[in-house]
Image (cartoon, rainbow, N blue to C red; front, side, top):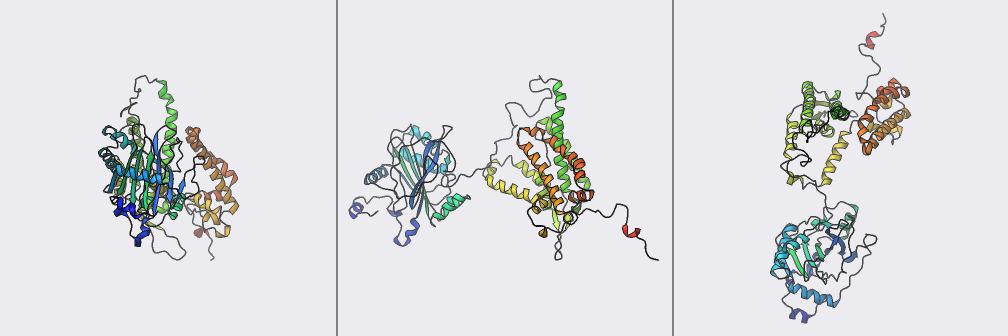
Length: 522
């Protein structure tokens, strides 16, 4: 919008005059503006919600469909300019503010509002609490009440924005200069990637907070420009969920019990018959812990790993049993084998052969069997109690990615996983494996489908209200393997498809040497 010379000479005390960009650097004034309004969600709680944005054109969130409307050119009336000038002359203006967090910015804004007589001193806490309410993006569904219609927002050439509204309200503009906007660089969704493509390089990010509150008697406004661009969490970007770590070290339900659990119950009214009835759930827990420990032991102690320290391995199993009994008496969680972590730990200690002939596979040379790394892992797990503040800064997406990587890597070398891939692969591309060479393709796929059905049944049982029967369903897979499968598949096929070793020995019987049994010509 062009400015008249008479207006510039009359109002030469403009505090934003030094913010204007030179004509040779006009591209640095590209802006991205996000409008957050104070709304009430379905839980009747106040929160800031994204309702509009400006990337050259204006886009608003449609109330009916909860999606972005068509871009349009925003209109600007002369009366809005007069209200803007009046509000800026009486409002709180903070330029080149040296703050890096939203609480610090809000604290400075509230203090400046008190100094400029916009709010009363007794309203300081309420205004600060309103500014620090939770922020939600457009994609997070929330029921909200309709708010007073927005007045005009003006994006001038100096890259600043102000929103005006009549009525009792709280109004703040947080301004962040960046290149490109750092607060938007952490988005990973497809929507945010498309949004980043629309924003020009070296754009200046601005967030406008507009809301009405009942404890203010007059409109209040604050304009803030930060000295350096900072990342305002969950304000100018999609909220990133963080790890929830409880504070302190206590039992799960401290109001119900303490650290020691009395065998006769907390109130001493534990009936005798309940002791006998507890045998059934105890058996279920025993089956789960035993199966998890033994499955982990079988995976870790494969013959191809050539583990030598068997005594230490069995001592670990003994410690698991003893600690399990002590944990039950103290109300602590049972010690599990941690299958994914244990397999990943063993893979990290495995040394593979480097001199591999063309066409041959790397083989395991040795496994660094020691207790130092396992002890350090246990120490770090224990230290997680005192580093709760650090753990709370870890995004859940990072943890999910790490766990997904560990889970996928632990599936390497499992025959069932390889055969599931073979279901989607033409037979001519099948690898040179014993179960591929010695079992027909259709029979191999039939065995894989039977295993997949059993695995699906276990998953359905575990994910529903029948999860208490999961140990029994797990035990039922034993008669399926021992009684049902031998009636469908031959002994040779079962040994190839369900052998303990990667390369089962089928031709030579134990204790016999076929070469020595052959009759030599005289």
